[in-house]
Image 1 (tube, chains in turn yellow, red):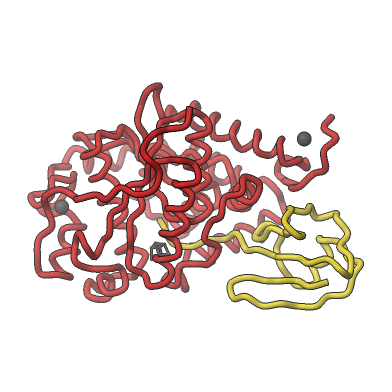
Image 2 (cartoon, rainbow over the protein chains, first blue to last red):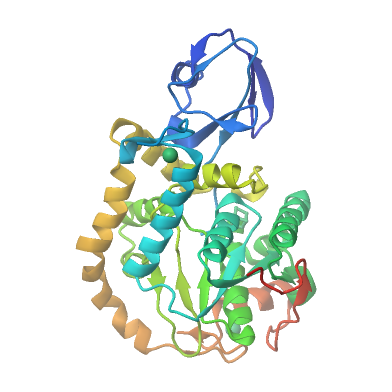
Length: 66
Length: 316
Ligand code: SF4
Ligand SMILES: [Zn+2]
Ligand SMILES: [Zn+2]
């Protein structure tokens, strides 16, 4: 599957099938700090991602503004 | 039981939510915060501080959809591409919902932008920026006859600030860290209607509501200590869901009051800034001193505002 990461933007190829939870663990990403989007919908951590999926892992932590 | 597929799982609620139920949860949490802390009274006019990011646009969307009369204020900070893009997001959102957006440009109005201003004043950018935002939001609210200024601070923001203040025992800040700061001397009340919702929930809210927010970070936020605090708190949250909520709301319920007494003397000493009239404990307020330092001129007078997007007519 194609995994797009943001800030900075980069793309990874990861072999499926793989659950969202395992994908995040493998990339060492805390689930509290991201949303996982498949196509244009949000997916929960138990969803199993397939080889032909296109995934965005979008960080949600924003700084400043205090 | 709901049969729709879950789109988000929230471990501190120990539940997964479909889109519709999640949006309802967000509205309920905002309603609960507004009631719990008496944030906005019936018929009061709200000015929402809008940055083009997920939190402020979600706050604006939530308040409008709950029926509040809420206009937006976008402050142009002059931070290169970041400001141009974030302004576009704010304008597009306002136009798409037919909401009224007021715009003020820091450079046009006060003669400096955040990068040059913070350098000249030898302040870290976020400190100069926060000062400018507070000043301009207050000012525009007073001049526009708004009762309340609402900001998009979420649970993660508040918990991170609290964490930083506790680490250093910043007693003055702890006394003032509340979801509502009451109005005083003609200055509007400040409220944070998103305190019961996390950053991740606000991003999800925007995705589900089709709100196109700026995902990129402000380039000046690099090295901001609060980012580190948020990561630390998320590491704790992952191990024990609900920690952020308990930390912040436990402080409000059990500790916040104890820090209040110390600042009452300070409150009494407040008087109007001799240049702009904002409440301050010094002769000239911190914002006016910043402007003077950066441009060699004193701020004052009123803020010319430019209206954009939306006709000012609210959809009923
Ligand atoms: S990150 Fe700092 S400089 Fe950038 S908008 Fe936020 S407060 Fe201002
Ligand atoms: Zn449902
Ligand atoms: Zn002043």
